[in-house]
Image (cartoon, rainbow, N blue to C red; front, side):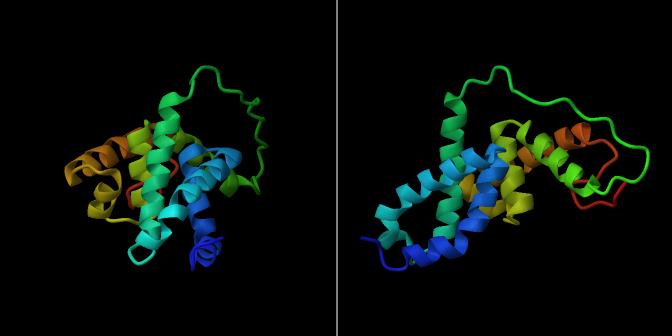
Length: 168
């Protein structure tokens, strides 16, 4: 049996929530597992949260569940392929390369900074909304965002000004 409105909400909001999960995990399969875990936890509580803001609740659950997974995960060697040589002519895949470089740089951030970047800059939440999701102060969100942007600038020199400045 399903809760009234739950299936429709999942069908409508899953793509956006899956994007958040992917940005947090950096892996399509882990993102699907994360979203499935969160949806399974939301379903029994649907009658309570349906009238409020279920997307905000789901986003917070994604961040907190991912953080608990991250704390338990072994972070030893990470497999990766060799970086191919780039041709001298224009690369038709440069936008995709940029997206992957940005995603890799975001995944290299500490968990809290990563959560702040995803919520603030990809989900367009305000500082107050981000603080509510992360259960921290607005000052913490601001300081973590500042540290994260500094780290991203160091990992992506000369590509894009992350804080809305002009392209370099």
